[in-house]
Each structure stands twice: as structure tokens, then as C-alpha cells.
Image (cartoon, rainbow, N blue to C red; front, side, top):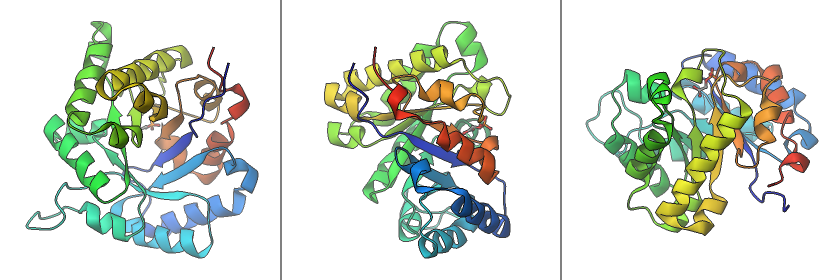
Length: 266
Ligand code: PGA
């Protein structure tokens, strides 16, 4: 029973919450509360709205707050006539390290296609940032027994053509759509089953080494109360947290729930 070599990543997706003043307070609060031992075994990222990024970057760097800066989306072009869009190059210049790609809200509310997800993922990699590629099934797909097929289709569309080294560097977030923002989180066993399936699919697409290296997060109604149960599963390498990441105290409780000693493969 070797402990997993993958370092967990706990990410806070703020969605369209917190203006830049609120971002300043929240990140400062995180910095004040966070002790070195809280992040000794876990990577942490925060994903504020675009308008907060410069403020967040300045504060994180000036006060050496041990969280990485993340974004929630970007265009796949570096520049051009794309009114209202933000490019991966602009994010990289701000010190952004992780970018969510293909979050279900982008796919469902803004008609982001599988092709756009694939192009954005490549654009993020091109600028040496880490994509957090989001996949997940609807309640209807789950009820019909199509969860695995949906995940495999999304992963294949997103990753097709990338090499094994690129795929090993990715983070995949398994986020069942029915669990997002509903208070109805998956059980730890269901999250483990899906994250294991994601890993096996990566193995088929890119080989065993990539499957062993890729980090797979669970997301959907994660709270300080349930975080530990997910993180104890061998194939859950972290969490993508929405609502509970908006408050520094509750987000840090989730970060603290990562206990590497429990992360052993049976
Ligand atoms: P939630 O959101 O934690 O509020 O369910 C998760 C997400 O959408 O990333």
C-alpha cells in the first residue's frame, strides 16, 4: 500500500462573486489564517473573477501568501478582435498558474463546445499554465447509466492529440452537474468511482505513466464537513470548491481536511 505520490490540489472557484475590494479582504484573511503546516502537503489555488486578478496577484506576491493564482476561463487566441474576451497570454503575464477550462457553467450557459474546450486547453498549455479541465454528467445522464460514456467522450474530445507529457501535467476536475451548487454532493464512493474511471480513461489515451501522474479533483457542494471523506479516497487528488471557497475560514477548513496519511491505495 504505497501512499499516492500526487500532491493534492484544493482550488477555490469564486465564479462571479467578490469584487476586487472583497477579493483583497478575502485573500488577506486567507494569508492571516493560513499556517505553513496547513499547506505542507497540499497545493491551493484561488480563481477570482478577471477584474480581481491584478489585485490578487499584487497581494499574494507582496505578502507571500501560499496560494497560487487561478482564472476561471480564457479565450484560446493570444490577441485579436474578440470583444469582451481575455487571452491566456494576459493571464500568464499576471502570474496566473491554473486556469479552469470547460467548467459546466461555461458549457451550459455560454455554449462552450468540446472543440472550444480542446482549443482553450491547448492555449493554456502553450503559455505554461496548468489547465483544470472540468468534466461531469447531468442528472439525466447519470439516471440513464451514461456517466462513464459521458466522461470518456468529454475527456477524449478535450485531450485528443496531446502527448503523454502534456496529459500528465493536467488537472482534471470531475464535477457531476447535479452536485454543483445544490448542496447534494456525490458520496465519497461515487466520487472515487468516477475519479478512478477518469484515471483509467487517461491511461487508455496516454498510457500508465500519465494516468499515475494526472491529478483528479472532485467538485460539487464540497464543504468543510465532507471534504475529508473525498480526500481520503485514493483517486481523489483534490477538490474544486465553489460556494464554500468564498469565505477564507471555510475554505481553509477544507484545505486542512487533506490528510496525506489516509491517502493510500488499497
Ligand atoms: P459548488 O461549486 O462547490 O458551489 O457546488 C463547485 C464548482 O462549480 O466548481
